[in-house]
Length: 288
Image (cartoon, rainbow, N blue to C red; front, top):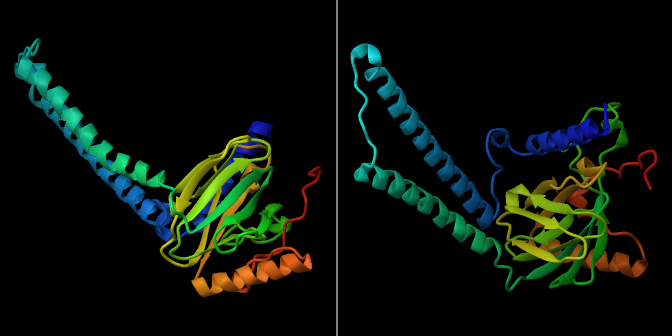
């Protein structure tokens, strides 16, 4: 298999794993939203799907009805609509109204997605080949920094062990945030373009070397939420998951205290004990 085939396989594997790691309905629809923005995206997706379905049924229904009832064998004579003012107005006004009906909720959602003002916590996410670096820049936890890399055991990847439910979506150090707080995420990259994507949050933002871009989310409930790098960034693009643990304010305060104690002692960062991840994957042959 060529390089392009391997990359395509990794992209497909990571996408399938992402769907399998979520609730069953995610196999057939978007992931269950856990933020207001993701809820708007989910509703808009449903609205667009219904509108497109109605247009499809209406257009093809009229077309097939006309073909069947006005065929030549029944002696039908073609009508002439050239320069028919009423028809031209109708096929101009109706699509415009449909587009306006679709653009209104989409514009509201995009404006809300870009409102990164007044965050409770600001975190910088830096994309590396192939891991994420997190720096807590503002708010509770300021000063904490760590790297987050794939933790799927090598035996699972090489087919020597059964694959877990979150195959290729486990990391050694997840991003930890409190529930109900506005989290601003500043994104950049150290080498090539990456993309920080967590579907359940409705966040997908490119991380570009030399630039700072931002996004935000406010999770409505606790849990572990998974995503992946959504930019084809290189050989191990499929091995670059994003994991966010949303915890209560009390657990977050305890985690912050633990990380600061670890930093003072010179020991690596760690995830909350209840959500500990498996051991980090061993380096692949030839990987630096």
